[in-house]
Length: 175
Image (spheres, rainbow, N blue to C red):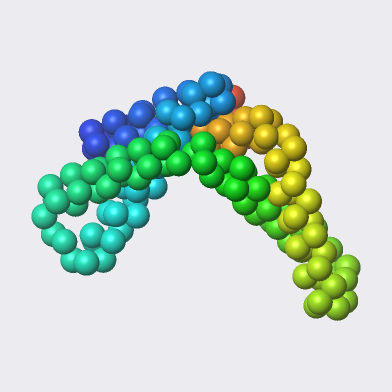
């Protein structure tokens, strides 16, 4: 069952699962280390993508260059988080409200709002409400964000272990 999983995929999958569980249950208490890890992950992914698109073929340059950039992005994110935290929190709430408004409009078979202009007024107003609500309930919004990030990492780690048996506590009938 585990023959087709390389050791790199196995290590990455296990590290993602462990980091995801830590974020899920202790994410708010570990907010700055979590931001550092998220910054490292994003910096690594973006730099690796840029290097691959630039036709860099040296594997050491790809891996170590991407990790170096990821660490720099993680450190910058931790250093700047106190200065831009309110702005980032408003943007996250705004995007959550925007997504919720689009979900409401997309759930109906019929057009709830006929006019395109009034549809955009509805979407932007719900997005603004989401942004201001995020500012008012900052602690709970951060808790939800870290737990969602943690659950994403757990699923990402599970996906890197393709021949792992399904989760035993699956509520649906697993194949």
